[in-house]
Length: 132
Image: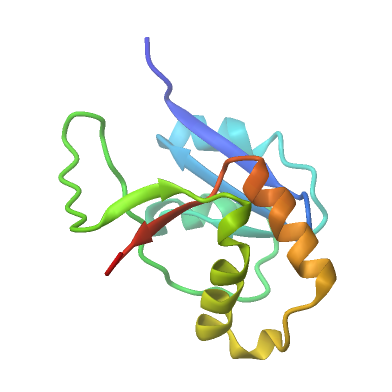
């Protein structure tokens, strides 16, 4: 028997409100949503499952995003560049790249450098390296 669905509630670091990702078959998602006790959250769900979330939670705003679903063995991922686990040597490059995407973040602070170093040490952030 395999996994029928999953629920990820991320509320660590600077994320407020919690960020929740839920996916699976309809019956599994219904059961998983019963475990959520957040007063306020950002849900990331497949459009086919959004009705289930709406039936349990008040939705203030809704944005359509594309979700990529893969089944092991059926994936066809094409990346023409190397993918590497980032480390603390990549902190400034990572933060500069974030500023390209979100200029509203303003200047890089010492606190942000420290926080980013800690996150990269934990080993959860990967980067795609183009042009060496």
